Length: 136
Image 1 (cartoon, rainbow, N blue to C red):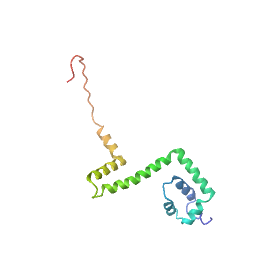
Image 2 (cartoon, rainbow, N blue to C red):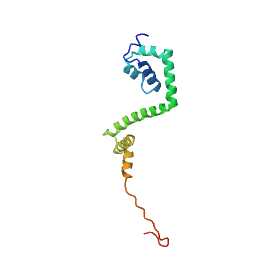
Image 3 (cartoon, rainbow, N blue to C red):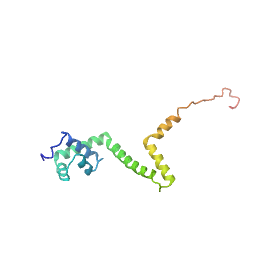
Image 4 (cartoon, rainbow, N blue to C red):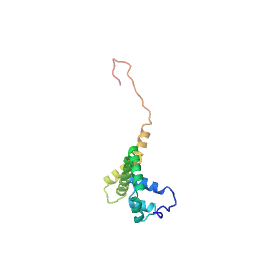
């Protein structure tokens, strides 16, 4: 266990516990990031201290509502990859490619910028002050 603690950053175990609680990365990705062998990672995950830290972080994440946001962000990232493939696929139909590009623009927020640009015009209202004649 002493060998496990020989890392550059003193907070790496807390960071690993937090990222484990998030569930955003796969165990393989975490092992690569923290330079852990599967055996060392397995030993660390069985310690009571690590388990308690993961549970505490999960509670904190759930209470703050961050878990849902992070999962949605990860899903959007995965969808973006698929949309990018469709948009650049010459074998896809034109309709599918255009729809993929349109959705990518929406996810990137370009549609909001377009709405803001369109709404910065001048509005003119014509009022009819003569109640007896129709407005022309």
